[in-house]
Length: 357
Image 1 (cartoon, rainbow, N blue to C red):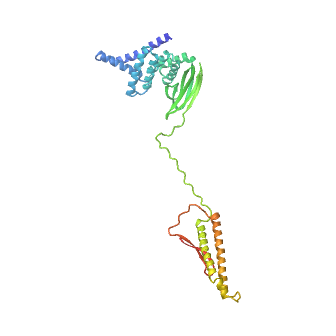
Image 2: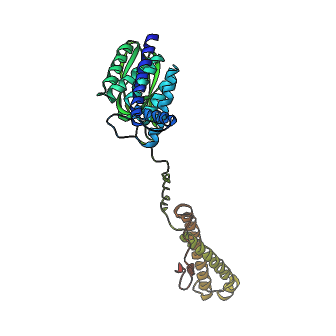
Image 3: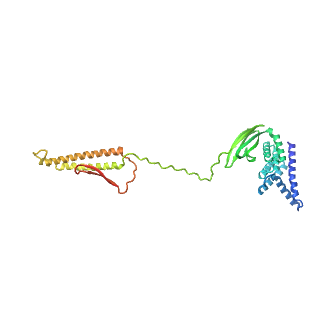
């Protein structure tokens, strides 16, 4: 491994030096030494991060990539391999380039992070198939490290971002990817927009291989959407009760009371008019055809009929009130409406009701 690290350092320095040489030609014959050094530094960074066959990145991202690349270069010279790899990968994120990719692979190999180095190599083969140096380094890396790693072929529907053990992979948002894992237990997660995530746990083995499919769950409803208010159920429709309205009972009760009053009057009148004494006086020595006797008999009959009518009305009112009346809330009668029971004794007893609606 030390000889490999020495070789990687030499190749990395050669790539950086080539960028400096190209930049130096652009600033030849300029002024002060300081200006030349600044131009060499700036243009060497730009030459290292400009991607092949791609549109130039935005100026702010190009500047950020240049700063990351320069920080990676310093860490690489100091043999701080992990820090160097992180800076080179950040530079690729802002402005992808095969130079930054190769340096990131070498830094991960020197840091003995074989799974990350192999994953970067798999990305490089797909991303830069026409860059001979990048393809050669990537294939060499995969050949050297494959025996110690577990390979996963991942498919996302739709394209997703892959995360392994909490660290995002260098693939970006893709539909298919190859990820290498060191031996042991790992968590592989896929993420989509709308905070949708799915995770799988895998036990990686030496020279192992497996497939993994992630399908995005449906999008959640928008957060700013007003919650739908539950529709209030319609008020229950009151089922009309069967039976007679209470007014019928009240009418019968009123008629019973009136009939009772008339019966009481009739009884009193029968006793007083003409009375037993008057009948004896007027009908002494006469038969039943005596007019006074017939008058008293008529009063008695009238009273008996009224007693029967009053009793019948009382029984009828009780039966109607207990068994046939539809008790409960009733609509208020219209203003001015009324029902009055009527009992008549002219030419016989009659009972009825009169109302105004």
